[in-house]
Image (cartoon, rainbow, N blue to C red):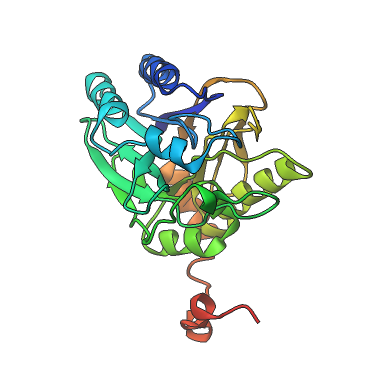
Length: 274
């Protein structure tokens, strides 16, 4: 069994407030015996709709400077893995990357993932403020299993989670800021459960709460069962992951082995919208 912590927070527009909260929750997670703590998307700050791209760019940082560096130091001190997100500076004028960091228990940034699918849907247009990532981050081998990284809207694109799984992922992490709206809680719960069930993976999906977000941070097991759902309250919850059970599910429900890749070929991933 692997004990992990899931953090559900309401990010402030003030970066320093969010950093203080994150450091407190890292310490709390360690106190509760967790080997990792997962934070949602937009940990660095809430970006309200009236915030300009220029203002968000001013807020952004590089990976190795104050915000992320403080998280790295805390991870090192407490000996705990941290899944965190930042607004990362990029070369595109007035745009930032929506970036997830896997910080290991030695305080090193072991993996970096820049969100591939920007949320240009249902009245939102993230591409007005963000630059899309340009590459998939391969699964990271850790003492918690092999970790595949996604962010929020990526959950609606099953190709990404399947590719990560075929590359060896046993646990998919998807820090999110899932925007509220008609049927959005149902969409969220369905997507998280489907990505777990179809790939025989754990899915760890910490979500923002309040502001414009739905909460309901979740961990789902490889059979599609909800291990925990944090509802609409801020807080930290710890749960166990059982990789032995994961292997058992994959043996009894061998979806990856039963794939007809001889038929699919490259067409599945190269086909264009008709």
